Image (cartoon, rainbow, N blue to C red; front, top):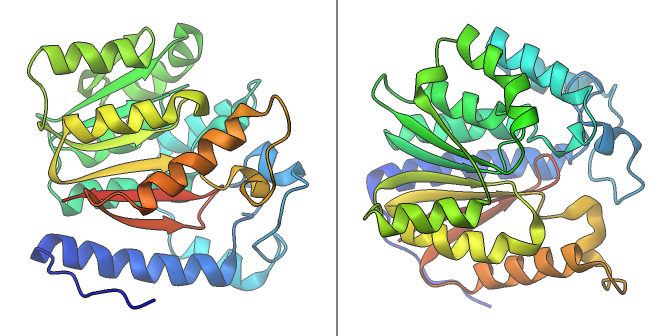
Amino acid sequence: MVLSRLSLPAELALGTAVLGAAFVTGVFLGRKVPQWLSTPQQRRGPGRRLLPPEDDPLWQYVLSRSMREHPALRGLRKLTLEQPQGDSMMTCEQAQLLANLARLIKAQKALDIGSFTGYAALSLALALPATGRVVACEIDAAPTELGRPFWREAGEEQKIDLRVRPALQTLDELLSEGAAGTFDMAVIDGDKENCGTYYERCLKLVRSGGIIAISNVLWNGEVLNKPQKGDGAVQCVRDLNERILRDSRVHVSLLPLGDGLTLAFKI
């Protein structure tokens, strides 16, 4: 199959070059990260391994020369990993890439769907200007209260607009308020059963040239297997991956970072 060349704006072309380098690095190094950076799920997971062992010197070198984690982010990450379901948090290398992309496109407004303790929201807030805003969607207030002291420590609490209710309700409210096409970036890290609906809402809310990021798109390697009865999450992830691949409204890169990260650039 021959893919036609695409004419891209300068900002998007530069971003694509950056992502190309990230993709090559990810393919070479794989998915499993060192213990001090990885999630419990990644450390224990029986799924398909794409990375060398966590003590691989080259992988350690790459991380040691790449990660610039703010002290508040580091503290929040460590605390989050101690919590039940802490492995649902976006990995630090994913969050750093998204923050850098936010800087690249000069983002002012971002969505974070499935904030949990707000690690990704804080990473984005740190990348936004003083007038920036992250609308953080989380159905449970308890984990966000764990994160709030770290938002305050970083001096970014005022940028994070936390909405504690079902994410679809928040997204529909934003659309009804006339916010379509006003967001620069959206991060989807919520329940997989609704990920397709989140994606469609975000396509309406994000501007042309903006970015939609979806995490856990490899689902610990289970996307390779036929979903078992009752395992709707795997089927939802597989369906969304196929949908985005064929979606003419976006340019797409699926990166083997963390448990898989899809970046959809809205045309």
